Image 1: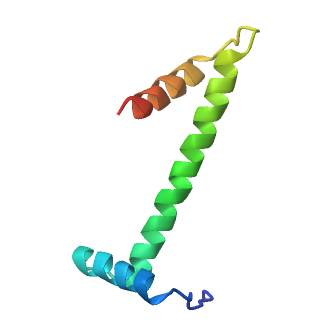
Image 2 (image 1 turned 90 degrees about the vertical axis):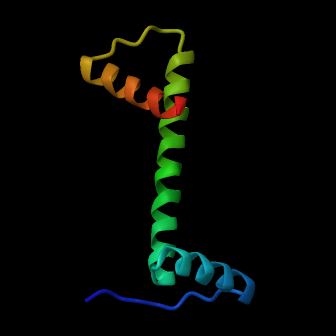
Length: 81
């Protein structure tokens, strides 16, 4: 069994959430869950991008495995979109 709680939202924010949920034909809490998932993904991508930028500025050459080169190419593809 999972625990649940009811978040407290001010009326204008709740109305926006309900409008978005209705447009998607979803429950407001399901939309909120999707939005949290998207925010977590965006945060992770930002952290990976920052680490890749730090590595690119490193004065020492970094030896990358084929897997790391593939990962780097994939992330750069996402960034280019």
